[in-house]
Image 1 (cartoon, rainbow, N blue to C red):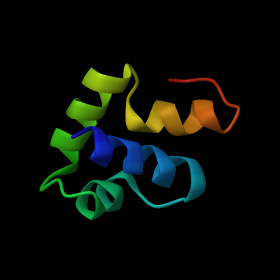
Image 2 (cartoon, helix red, strand yellow):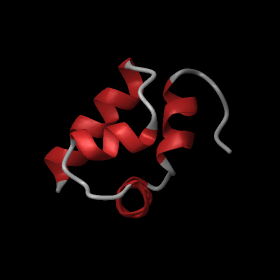
Image 3 (tube, rainbow, N blue to C red):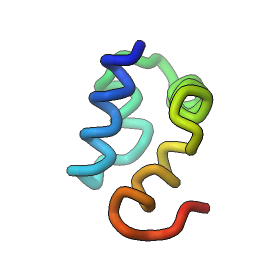
Image 4 (tube, rainbow, N blue to C red):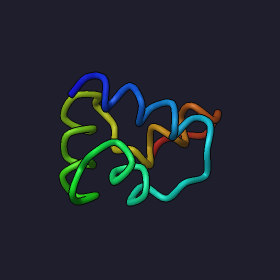
Length: 59
């Protein structure tokens, strides 16, 4: 799980891929489950993580 989320972080930081495609690429069947797990373990929604790591404000 942690490896998947680490890979998701890399993709969120370095690509413009949609969240749905990132979820699929790292092995989740649905983007909803990915979003839930990412937020639970990282404290931010994937969308907010992407904004934050690129110098924007979350949410």
